[in-house]
Image 1: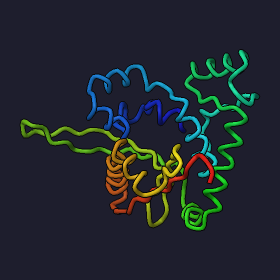
Image 2 (image 1 turned 30 degrees about the horizontal axis):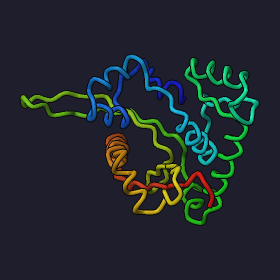
Image 3 (image 1 turned 90 degrees about the vertical axis):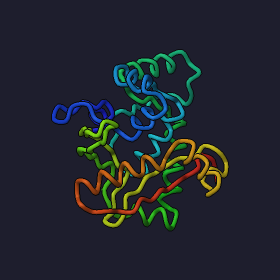
Image 4 (image 1 turned 180 degrees about the horizontal axis):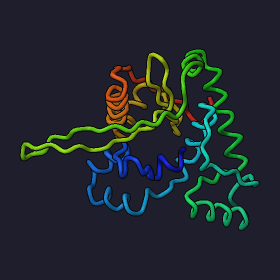
Length: 213
């Protein structure tokens, strides 16, 4: 389940290292330790992307809650959003839901993207041990985790949203991928899949802009 995975609550494996955790660890070990104890702070810009994922992949994210409001201007809507945030849930309003539905429809109707998502499984969680070599010559086993957006019989697929006009174009997206270290996440997922299945799958990214066209 999404709550268990993102909360890293599995009793069987204990604390595990995700791709986002690895990126934080490389940037700031202190920040990584802090987020281990306090969780990652929510960001409004992530909410639309999460909703688009759920609609495109036709999966179930129990963290998402739709508030009966078209914006966050009223006190009631603001209080409802704050209460859901406090529970670790993702509040979205009806305008968000309408926008995400249009974005998801564009992905599903795209000839290539629609074909990619026509076969496979959504939101596949993986847990695997990874042996890490230390400077003193010894090694240590780290339990890793990853949640793949979509797995086809012939590829691992990641769905990304781009908030800027032209953000899905190769040059613009390439800069975003470099800034946010998407290659690390791709390597994490493909390594995990190969460790568990013995199968080396290619990694594909489908990117959709959140503004028309």
